[in-house]
Image 1 (cartoon, helix red, strand yellow):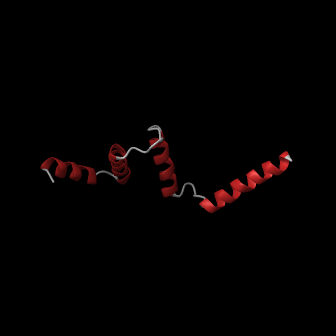
Image 2 (cartoon, one colour):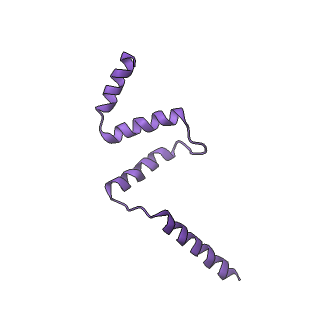
Image 3 (tube, helix red, strand yellow):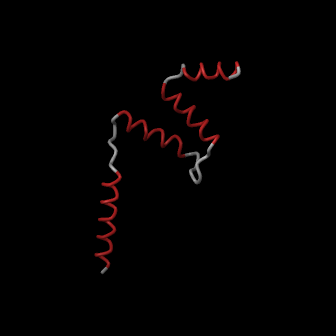
Length: 81
C-alpha cells in the first residue's frame, strides 16, 4: 500500500459511519456501476436504508409483499370478468 493510500484510508476510517458508508458506496459505484440505476437514486436509497437501520420504519418480508401483490392481481382479474 502506498503512503497516499495509507493516509487516505486512515482519514476515511476516522469519519463517522454514515460518511464511511458513503465513501464505500462511491468507490463501489465507480468500480461496478449498477446497470439501469440512475445516480439520483443514491441519496434516496441511503435515506431509506438509514430509516430501516434506525428503526424509524420497519421492513416488510418479501413473501408478504408478493402475497399482497398476487392478491391484488387476482382481485383485478376477478373484477374484470
